[in-house]
Length: 199
Image (cartoon, rainbow, N blue to C red; front, side, top):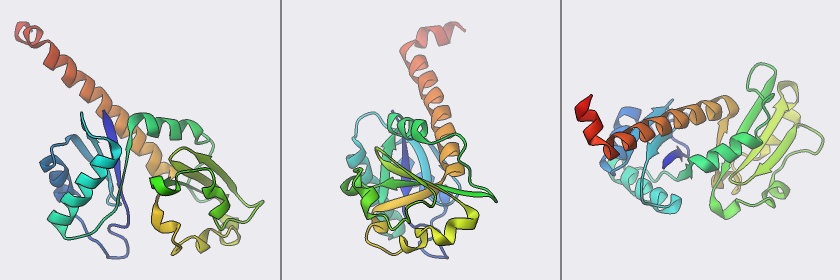
């Protein structure tokens, strides 16, 4: 199964610095396969055969603590869960000079539609969607300061999510799809070693 690990709060404002090459090695040392990192905000695609999301989160948080001495929280979501989020994400949403669109990935303790009532977003400004595992939010750049989005930063609720813009999220999904194809090729090769020898 292909997963994404989303690390919270690394390489932000010069704090919690982690080199992606070393982080990749940490994941591989933890026994994970097909490890790929994407940009330095902490997005790591990998494969695992046995553990649950919660088990993988604990394993990775402990590995990062041991290797980097940083207590970093990690959200783990599998391919099916990310695919479901992508299906809920409107195609027309973008993150550019005209629009700000984000995916707020939620920790399990707030992963419920009731989270919408706790967000300090102003009604009538922007568009917000809850889908299992995430809150999707889009607002025009000219209305960002009026949206109430800035009030979210620093709240207890904000500490229970990690945010990626839609461009990053879409690229993560593409990398997960590529990793899934690679995993399928590897599985096929493992199941048919005779065919490989004959080629």
